[in-house]
Length: 129
Image (cartoon, helix red, strand yellow):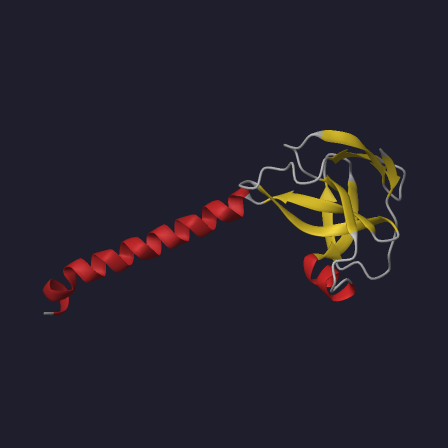
């Protein structure tokens, strides 16, 4: 599969890909819900993930090739779809980014809050008795 990424003026999302020394602009998930409320579009693959199964190449606006991965083959724990980039009329590629660090930070904050709550509950009578 070989596709060409289209430039749209109303892309709201933007990520920089260091490996390819380029910036990718895309529709955010919120924009896609507004533009296509009935979900009458088709996703034919993903770009940006590192764990998927490669199935083709997409050419960026500056002529640089990006590997395309099969749809829904990214690791759901460490990666997430953040938006979609147009390659044809109503045909898109999902943009996937690594979210492992954000998820570890959120999990750590939850653990700290739970630990603090349990500590206060256990020692409440002693501290405030």
